[in-house]
Image (cartoon, rainbow over all chains, first blue to last red; front, side, top):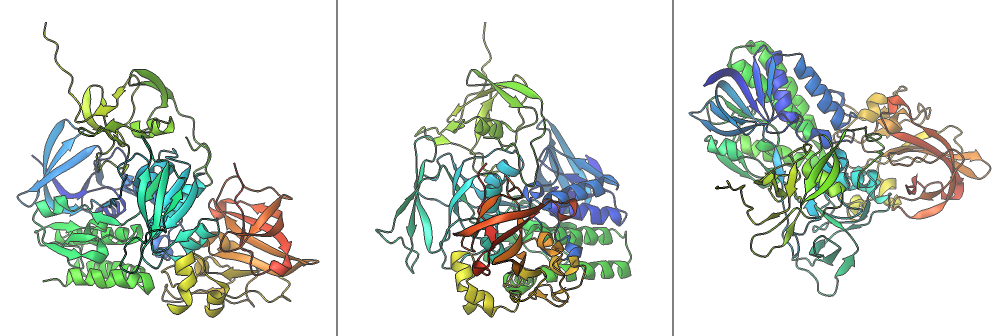
Length: 361
Length: 107
Length: 171
């Protein structure tokens, strides 16, 4: 067994921000990620982020990712890639398998879990056919691997992921045939839907996918209108000539590690389902265990980075790297930045849901 | 199909070409790319067939979580091809069902 | 707020009625000689680069970053910095009087191929429908705009308000 001070699990926006904040406070940090490269899902976010200057608004996600990694390289941060965390035992022992061949146990003084989230699936006839994939998977293919999974795409779901990926598929040279939304109202920001719409992509509300057709690959999709009880209306089926069906039906927090480590479960439908209980400082009920980012409730990368900073700061403070005054001031700054991201007609719901988790007894 | 030029990401940079063997046929791919990406770029639409119904499967999550894209790679079954990089000379097989491990040859 | 956003939340794009009801949207008056920024951001998302990027302080969001941006037409010089700074691609520049009966628009564009100066293009409305032909006057792609090109076009000014962009060109 080896010993480290703060172990951060996951090198996405939340984990990197947590590591940076803790290392800037003077702590030594080990960050572990199962992928070959750090950055999590930031490098497929090629659009400019919302927010204000202090949230790096107007900067593309890819460039924020590059900057975070650059910042980390100047600090006391050790990075283990290709390393899977398989469990957390006796509260602070992290079991890691490195490069699929070496088993290591790291005894940490403090642990921050930032494992992110995974895309939900929607079950319909033919949904297992190649060509049916998560919207995020298509985004990874086009923006990271530079490969078009298809030329003619049907997008299921009109939340921000659905519309942003639709836009990025157009940018990559695909044709998006339609965006369908089962609810009566489109979910994503109006500015996102508007830019997709003026590019000629139709939106259909109260509509869902009924069937994917094809032999070895999608060659057609059948969509159908829904009634007030969300039941398909016979006779309203429409066949679309598509080779790809992308599903943007929300994300589920990757909570396995946290729950296996003993974190208390709280149900939050708005934030993606079961999440570990945590307080405003991102501390869980397990001593010295913090969480940050989508694992603590699915929001956006900007919020994940702020939560990461809160967690990193709290972990460093608990190890006495910073004085109370400094902690309070930096903590309140981060809280204020987070609150401004959780305001307005879209953010309000997330703010209420987050408070419900924090206040859950 | 590869995205040769992109309004935000710019032109595709030059990469070293290597050869992998896919179901017995050589295929030229680029160093550093993921197996699934290389196959989809070359029009290979499915990566495995399921154990009972032999129905085809491709990528679903693309980030190593769902295991829909697993193939047999260098004799090892159930390799997540969306997060495994190609290597020169790598032998990749469309996997049927759970796949089979390399068998030791008894003399 | 909710009642005026029906079209936006069903079609994906706001109707003119919805825009006219929003304090954020101001079409520059027809007798104005200079270009001015037009913002179509009616939902109150937490975002303010339009305000912070403007060298003239002509756009106000305010302390609450979910407030709607408002352009001060007196102060706006039509420089176009905000057009590329807006992460939502929700700002363009317009004027009614360019030459003869032609209006002028400069809008953000992040697709390939880029149109060429002098090229005849199809102008589209908010629903992506063809409205009329237009002429590309300038294609601006500078480092400061971080890979968002700004396309300047002229088009018949009887479609002054309807036109917001061009049809994407095929590769």
